[in-house]
Image (tube, rainbow, N blue to C red):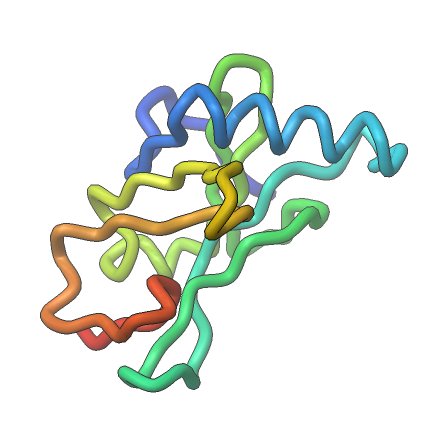
Length: 115
């Protein structure tokens, strides 16, 4: 079963947290779902970030961030440690952004990196 710990390896800005909660409410996301953050192969630099709503699985760790359940596969921890998720709502860009000080290189899209 997924375990809950106190300190998440990533941070969500207030804007990102509020937007995730808004989406869950607007889209009627079931209460047992949380915000999944992770990585997947692909992207121009080798890997890209993954963000979506999902149910926790046995291989996951869950964290509570101000009432929002954050879900992350244990294997992804080393790739996202220290990352900050933000939400931009401007004229030039709208969406979630990822800032990871651990990434060795990134590409212009802001969601792809190499480790």
